[in-house]
Image 1 (cartoon, rainbow, N blue to C red):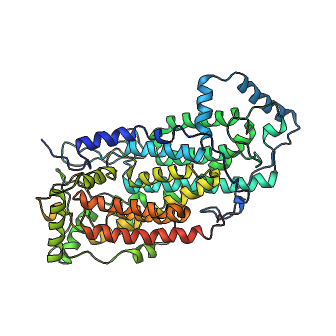
Image 2 (image 1 turned 180 degrees about the vertical axis):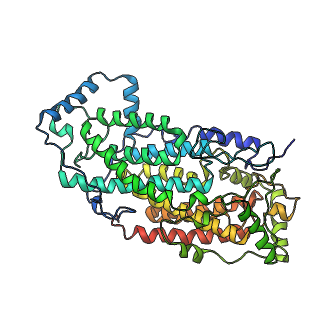
Image 3 (image 1 turned 30 degrees about the vertical axis):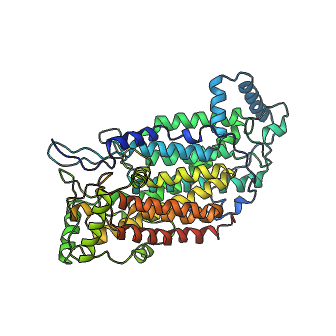
Length: 514
């Protein structure tokens, strides 16, 4: 029987993780309606990511709320509210918890669904997912950690820019919320003094639909179903008339197109490389007098995204990616590396219950939301407690996810620059506790993602800074405990991630939101 080494977890652990991946929303399902402590009325002046200015995309003024058409829209809300079904009430309650939160949960759900490596063909080659035919096997995308980090970043970024534009137009046009025009309307969820045009809900829907169309093209029926539910909930809630929502959706879609255009040329399409590039990496490493990494799967699987390090980052330029690359690991032929491998073997053979628990907690392998998704979950749970406005939710999620996308870029550039072998390749006696990822060892992706995330989250929630740092260090060490990385991989990844996190902090202190 052919061996498959890709799976990152033991059977028991995998069952647990897959169980969690099917219930991505459960941990925040019971949260009440979003009631912002601060409406962030000035958010229309905050620094955007891709928009040149908040008014770059024109939005026509709304009709006065004294027109017959507006009165008809008010009556539509009354009609919905007079005949609410149990399903309607459930939908309204679900979306009232926060639109950025709910779409982030949907994103994590789809990442977990698609985070499955393709099985090999009969001839020992591996099929490649195609965005042109996303439902054919293997389904597009394979939402591995770099792909997932990029998807989280683009979707969060588009929502943020769209909301900044929306806040600008809210203040410009000043259209009152329908429940302030007609006091007989019920209000489900939050009341706000912010103008209702364009609808906050609509803007988030529009941006999400366009970005999901790009990132998860085979899931459009599901996304459209969620979008229609969200739109209906926005109108039923009494906070938006239909024209508010439609204007928001149009604005959100238009803003998202800037992100779609960038994504199409950011280099991800060619990140997988080809056979010539794969063999060239091995040859060049040998020419340097080093031992190259090679796939331990049978049949040998091509390396995961060897050119992802050339993808265009958000927080800095490509020259900075190279500048952030840490110095080399110990030579594979050195006594230092031999001792590092011996340490891994000793840890794996004598892992404590606590170390095993840490390995499993942070495994984030196949069928899960990936390490970037793990940090999105952590952030979401903490942001809920802060009662942020939707625009601040989006800003914070965008900062977090741009940081982790850029961490993926720097990490993958480093991995394939040094092409360093895994501990199991150095010493076959090492049996990992959670599988063997199909890419080079140095530096640790978990360490890089986690340190970068901890730094920017610690800036946004300083009271949680030490807790995030502790989690990041634990996530980093989990890869040593699992036999997947040497200590050097983890330490260098952690240091590199922290530098990337500081790039995000530098943006945060100048974006106008603080």
